[in-house]
Every structure is written in C-alpha cells, then in structure tokens.
Length: 75
Image (cartoon, rainbow, N blue to C red):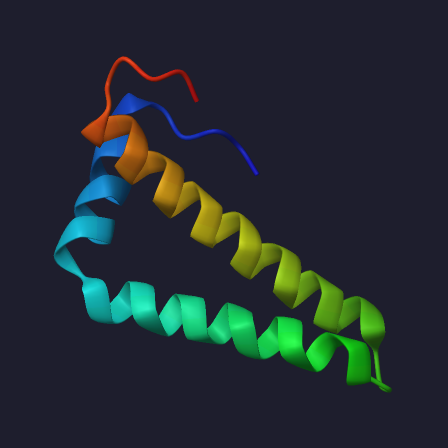
C-alpha cells in the first residue's frame, strides 16, 4: 500500500476519530476474515487477499490517527 501523504493522513485520522462505528465495523470484518482463514477450502488466495487488504487499511487508519495525535512520533 502506498504511504499516505500528510493531507491524506489528516483525513484518515479524522475518519478514525469521528466515525467509531466504521472503525468497529472494519475491526469486526478483519476479525471475521482472520477467524475464517484457517477453515477456507475454496480460493484461499481470495481469502488471504481480503485479509491483507483489511489488515493494511486498519493499520493505516490507526497509524494515521497516532501520527496526528503524536506529531513528533516517527511512523
């Protein structure tokens, strides 16, 4: 995933801070995919891809919030 620039980081931090329902849904979706992954029998690559995208998105949102909350912290 491309590292977001400063403007996108601020927008992602706002999404994280102002939309707790979205963050909860995203975390629940990631947990569901991670829990189902060991039991996947059809198209494991698709299941791994969904898990990877959700993980990257979740991490990017969290890191953006942390970067805005702690501007002197290095990513």
